[in-house]
Length: 373
Picture 1 (cartoon, rainbow, N blue to C red):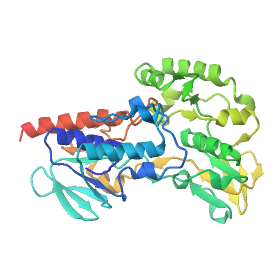
Picture 2 (picture 1 turned 60 degrees about the horizontal axis):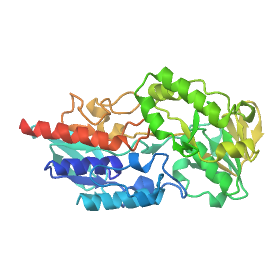
Picture 3 (picture 1 turned 180 degrees about the vertical axis):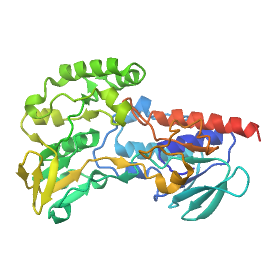
Picture 4 (picture 1 turned 90 degrees about the horizontal axis):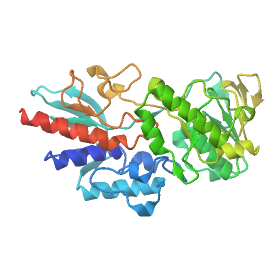
């Protein structure tokens, strides 16, 4: 088992429940490293009830939308509750077929290991992706990827440019505004934007329903809901998204943005939206419309890659976009029996809630396979 995040821990717990000896390898220094490294003030966009893992509940005291540190604490207690064996600071580098029949050879930073069943749960957002803009090396201001963003307070009274109007970009922009930064968001494609909840009503259950009905119906309901909540944002620089929120996810795996204060600030004139970046020229950034801006800091919310190619790319189990062909936990790819992937698929209804689904599928598949040995 590689990865001690929610997908890896859930899979390990259910495999152990079925009698498997499970060892979890974690590249970082502790459980839930991706959560530990995320920025202060982050809250889950998914409800606590849909973020709990099998066999141990997420306590009500954490509220409807737990914080980053709540998630870390929960994962620690989850691993302890299920008595999971975890080796930290051990990286999975490559998976190969072993000479022993039906076994996998794992090349790790701690040496080779043999296993009959292997689960890769190294995370959907493993490798930060940054575009190669012309002249980027000449920029003299601060330049970071969103993965390196730790807190909004250091940007107080500074001019910050957030690149990307997706979920991460909109959320970071909201935190920066609250901290007193002068915020500009560079947008290439208008996003679909929703609040976590509308009044007292959480919207995640509606998004979950939307995953299971025709995309056109979900798109239409989503557009109507956005107009009811936010009105027409075109005068503020965000026209209607060119594609419905559910259709876009099914085609490009890009989810809707969840707003936590950015839209209100935008309407109040405390933030602005500008076109995409064309190039960097020293201290200046040239936008697609020819406008030049000179922010103090650039925060790139431009997404992530899966980083699976060095580990399993040679096995023929990946799609051209780097996702596993069999990304639903189980059944596994016919070319790689007993090699499973967990946590590499989500939806507008929330990615965390898929961890238990993948874990149950993997545990059932492994248990069935073991009866045939």
